[in-house]
Length: 216
Image (cartoon, rainbow, N blue to C red; front, top):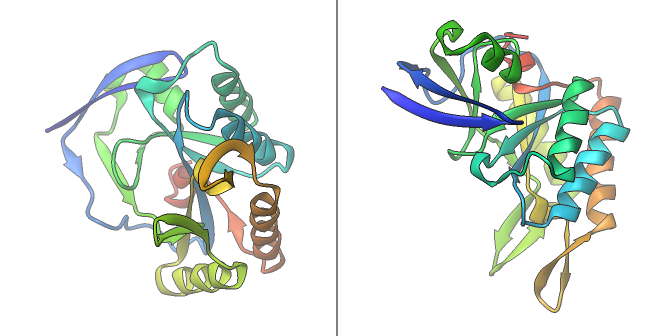
């Protein structure tokens, strides 16, 4: 049995999980892209995080968030922005505790907590990341060229029926004298915007994890 202590936007519960679905979730081929923004937490490139969250809100773009549960301040601008995106059905809240996304077999996470732990279906979908927005090379983060990102996404969809694109705050932080500063790299944001626009031109849908696995 796996037990998680989870705190999301001020609601705490203990989840006991008896069943873990294998390495790749088995669900219908949505021919979609899931954007996952990981490492959401206080004290870590917060200005960059806020800029990214506000980008997804202002562009009406869905994104699934990997939240570091014990490093969030419920009264912070960061959590208030997450609440804003969640209320617009743009943000999906998930736990940043493993190497890939964990989402539960319920319509949404906050709704699940409000119903209480007894209502949980005790099933985990494991939907691993497939494409990284940046790669770590020779001791630093290097942006993957847009054409390679799009090629990887096409490969994922043609092979598996979906693609998960992983992005992190440090992918969008400006490097100053070899050190990441809490300043948004506008060129990186433009690259993300280009990828999203080109996906839309191909009539590829962007969904949350729960939408992709067909539980929402």
